[in-house]
Amino acid sequence: MSSVATSEDATLGGMPDSPMAMPRGRRRTEAVMLVFAVALVAFAYANVGFGLKGSLPSGMAEYMIAFVVLLAGAHLAVRRLAPWADPLLLPLAATLNGLGIVMTYRLQEVGRDGNPGSMSVPLSSSATLVQIVYTAIGLGCFVAVLALVREPRVLQRYTYIFGLVGIVLLALPALLPAGISEVQGAKIQIRLGGFTIQPEEFAKLALGVSFASYLVTKRDVLSLAGRRVLGIDLPRARDLGPVIIVWAVSLLLLVFESDIGTSALFMGLFVAMLYIATQRTSWLLIGFVLFVAGAYSASKLFAHVGERFQIWLHPFAGQNPFNNAFQLVQGIYGMASGGILGKGLGGGQPYLTPLVQSDFVVTAFGEELGMTGLMAILLLYGLIVQRGLATSLSVKDPFSKILAGGLAFMLALQIFVIVGGVTRLIPLTGITTPFLSQGGSSLVASWILIALLMRLSDTARKPPPQPIQDEGMTQVVNLS
Image (cartoon, rainbow, N blue to C red; front, side, top):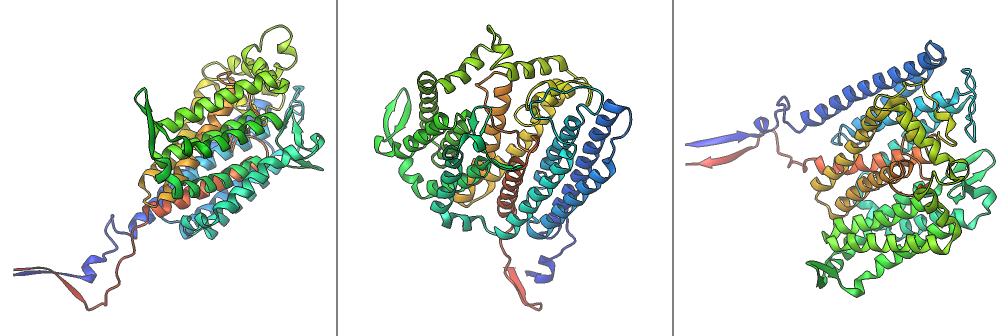
């Protein structure tokens, strides 16, 4: 007796769990979630109009059509270039991007809705259109990354090139005159005429790739244990070099650029990826202790760093609420006035906080959507991080595993740093909120990060190639 399976039986495409049906199901899920994202953004946009002027916003139809066309193009590109990619990443990012456009429009209308504004840099009447253009550029880069990076391991060949590019981009603002690089006391941007770019947004991606590649080759050495102290296996002294170097660079950023946010992000990214590569808790403890010690020392040695800590610890003391701590205090008052459910989109006064459209956009959402709405937004970020970490667990290639975990942690740490800063959990920094803040550098870099995560998830979920059989061949499975 024998049972025989033919190649025709083995390649049935109509089965729900067949290799061809699964990517189609993923893309259908993505399409449905994108429709939900567009509907949510349109609802928020309409609410802003009714909250400000009692009618639908002017130009809403044109903006929403442009948004839908851009997302449709991105969805079709994913179907073609990364059919096995995680179906939730694009809709989650699109929802946040859309809400950022809505808040940009809301702040753009300050002074045009009968309420005087006090933002230090009022938004122009074309701010929403510019944000749509930046969204188009970001999604263009998203598609370009998917098209050019077909295999993540290709990036591993350029370890030192990415590292050099990242360091140059980080150092560039510190080397330029303050007139074109400084904002709110931190040297974090390059301003040429009416065009502004924040190199750190792209530097963190380049350094993330470089770190992942470096750790793949060195993880066995870095995993070796030295002395055991309090139940923790510490690394050998000779292996502390990479952490000491990164610690020194982060301190230089903190001192010369007065940029606590980038310094924390830079140090935290490397230490987290080091932990993913070696699974040693001691690296986390060493990195945390080194950064806290360095930041505390810098606060005592350099006045501009100490001022940031003074604002953090005593924002309501003396004249601080009216001077250096004015921005932080206004943001806290705004979120407090929003309460649990908020004042409704268009119903608050977030424009009283200087630069609310960039550094403090979280407080704007907290005031108008309340703690409930702000927690929902943080949940969207949490889902993106969770999908990134799930990709890191499922992918088999060591380089891709470290890179996926590092990118997910990078997003999580950036959200923690900015939200922790505006709520006084940690010292205030000048980094942007991904997808929500008004501006181009952060938005474009965030879409590149999502593209890399989608390429990594596509690699993790793609089935291995099946052997090709002739049409008439049969395979004997069992003979008796």
